[in-house]
Image 1 (cartoon, rainbow, N blue to C red):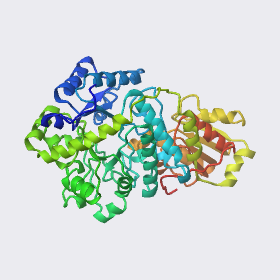
Image 2 (spheres, one colour; image 1 turned 180 degrees about the horizontal axis):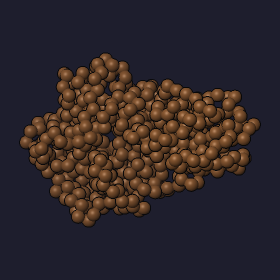
Image 3 (cartoon, one colour; image 1 turned 135 degrees about the horizontal axis):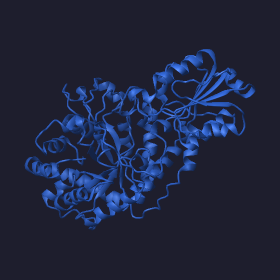
Image 4 (cartoon, rainbow, N blue to C red; image 1 turned 180 degrees about the vertical axis):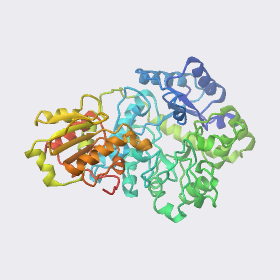
Length: 524
């Protein structure tokens, strides 16, 4: 890798710095050669890493099989070193690691989802800063400079198919406070962060990987709600903002145009009105909401750059894009974006001098502290809850593997009959007190979180005639698809990690007090 000096680049080499094509951890030798060519022939500014081509942004709809690679972390570090060694200019390496490298890489530390962190009381937000710091250290250990996180979207639409659990919650103040706490931790580790998805992806019902969501709010409503976290973040001096693929007609003179392609939104609102001077990053340009718009290769890249994006993430047509930008862009446009990227790179490389040791086991203690701070007794009936102390009860596990840590822990102190839900649910439950541990198959709302209708009917039936306490080890929005009116106690544990199950058990046994506050409001 060459020394950090970009000042002598030619005009076309400067344009190359705007391009951050995708790189894949599990590429073939031939595919690696193609990435090498982009680096050497076009002097791209950086790379954005994904697990594999089968799992990349839009490909999941094609049902391509994702091959598990137990050595992905080692492979990622090796590829980054290799690409840096052949690069004519230093590459800024980025990745989506909202809840840690585990979002993309096997056998790496996973931290709680943003929705879990959203349940932490405000006065314990330092825990979120620690998460950012731990994730930053993990990224540094493999050579990554930029985490495309946090998600600063306010999830005001509970049916949101693409944000949901990735958001800190439904209230602008909590999303802002916790996004900034996460960002602060990343920065403390020497890794750059990025607020996304401007101007706010929280009130959408369409997945922008597949189609273009349209937000029909007024300009004033957007300033009061969606834009609030970004305004506060800009005031605090954040480095970069990622633009979402979503249409906001009230900001674009009534046009249904993606924010990533809108001068009105990027140059008008973000630059001129909000005064943002940092780097603007496009969301992945392979996403179907924009990738299908321009059949001619390179036009999309030009349109995104002309709209005001400095970094073209997941640009698929690098050579053509460089050529068309060179033909159409003004020298002023090129110099302004290049200067911003140069500054970002300088910051990244200055802060990334020493790499910490990678340790997959670290973070267990932090996760345990988060479990204690986030656990939420969402619906509480003290009298019926106390019956589990004084009377016998039966336990039902729904959707977990054979060894359920939650019940294993409780078993050390209490006797109970345990049954596992199978279809149809044939086990006779004779007792009056029922403790249910629900582990939804999916964190996403699609197909009702993977929960079978018969399971929902069984829970409803039991709660009508029995004293039911439900511990939910998953997305709290699951409660929207359950009939919860007759469930006496509902405890949100959020994650199925072993540490979270242990804390859930301590709460049931009366050894831990729930202090978490639900990040979402549900009518139950």
